[in-house]
Amino acid sequence: MRSLPLFVAFTVLAAPGFAQSSAQLEDLKRLSIEELADTDVTSVSRRSERLVDTAAAVSVITDEDLRRLGVMTVPQALRLAGHLHVSNVTGPQYAISARGFAISTANKLLVLIDGRTVYSPVFAGTFWEVQDVLIADIDRIEITRGPGGAVWGANAVNGVINIITKRAADTRGTFVNAAAGTSMLGPWAIRHGGRLGGAGSYRAYAKVRFEDSHQLESGVDARDDFDFGQAGFRIESSQTAAGFALLQGDIYTGTTGLIDRREANLAGGNLLARWSRGAGTPAQTTVQAYYDHTYRRIPSQYRGTLDTFDLDAQHTRTFRRHTLVMGGGYRQYRGDDLGDGPGFFFEPRERVSHRLSLFGQDEIGLGRGFFVTLGSKFERNEFTGFEVQPTVRARWSGPRRSMWAAVSRAVRGPTRFDTDLRFRVPTGALLLTGTEAFESENVLAYEAGYRKLYSDRLSVDVAAYVNRYDDLRSQELPTRAGEPIVIANQLNALSRGVELTTAAQLAPWWQTHVSYGYHWKEMTRDAGSRDATGGASEANDPTHQFKVRSYINGGPFEFDLFLRAVSSLPQPVVEAYQELDGRLGWRVRPGWDLSVIGNNLLAPRHLEFRAGTAAELYERSVSVRSTWRF
Image (cartoon, rainbow, N blue to C red; front, side, top):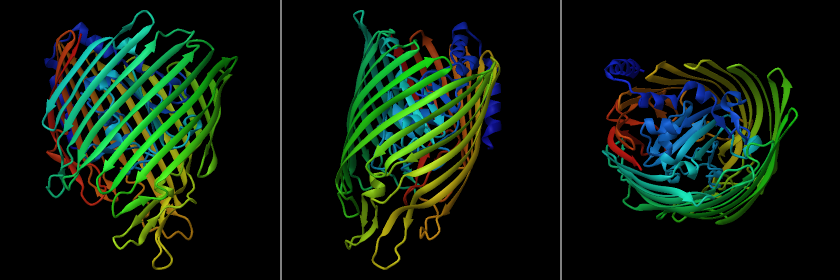
């Protein structure tokens, strides 16, 4: 925490030297505290509601936050969220978690991009290196902390991340981004949008980036350089109550280096269609379908392909004191996972999975600002049959403040890691095996929160939680020589935490956002368990996280800072660290911005996470970026 005084002093000393301009003050109005409280979010209940009125712990990263802090990738964007733990693991790979259970294959967060679930049934997590959205096209990122299984289904155990891009009607014209720095070339991106006659709008984009390799803790080059390219489009009709339709898709390809000089190959694409009607009326209906294909190839280790088809329908109706949301869906996974090497493999190699779901949720107004929400998701999978994920939420909303509480159950369904994974030693003997008997992990979560907008210059948001986890994944040692370790469900956990978030308009030209999170967790074993890991392979979390974002305007210049402090990780040990990112922006003229962006400015290199035997350090970097809009 020694960097905090430096941060405050630098910010305060820099401010008086700036002259103000109406254009720059208008930019901070786009970030105004009152407008943020009135932001509409859709992730909590799968319907639009004001952020201040949600009965859940929610934070929003806006498009202006992303621009002001020079964000270039999705993980960088998520790092801005006050209570997410975001750690660089190896190369472009990240461990991202909410309310604990951070591992390199974190599996308790559900992630969506424009309603498409970016989920791997191999390990129930997200391959972050291939989730590459054009940052300038992001409208907002909604982060719900706490279970979301009642509306989103399995794997929304500790939270939901929903990345929502802008409408094509809002991105007409041409946008060009060029950037180069000490550790990355790019992103180089171009996007163009326009009208489709009088019926709608379109946009198309392409982007590439090239990241340098990092250094191992031993000082050896990790050779994990990353080259990635992506292109996509969006076509949509005009928005009317009678109907709205869109079609969008992306395609990507990339390579990442490995320590033994071989390259891993990544590729994929998706196509999504959505139709809705009744926007702004008491009865709204949405139907969505998407197809997603992914390919991963790690020489002499793994080759996997996954084809996903998803169909989802939802209807929202408001009548009297009720707001009812109900729907259902079907999803098919068709995976081919080849363990191409002497170590692990999957049995069976190919698996086709079918998921059916129904959900319903009713918010009931009881009068005098009191509301109760009852709902549940009913989901069927091929491993454990039907899973029920209910929630009960209550809130009271008054002028500029609200209080809420919730009790929810959510599950993480079995994956191929849990049921089909096999690991053999060079002699051919089986060392570890999954089992079809693996049950769903589950959590019973108790939450409460309070929000208050004291004026248009200050807001406070406090949330607290107690989570009880059962049937967590364990590694059961054999009882007889020659038998393998068996993946089972004999770990449990209890966690508690408090999350504090404030936003303050300290002056017309200066705004800050501060967050602090405390997280405590205890892992236990079932009676008779022979697990020797103690849960170390399932969770490695900091007790404390502290983050500060500061935005300063001055004439044609913008000066923005982002400080984060993360306490130590217990097992394997990672020392506490503090880091600072900064941006100096210059509006050369309308439509043309120049920025100098610094990342990890407090130390030449630092360690964020350990996974395996070769930990990587992440270095200080500086880049220059130019954006044009015309």
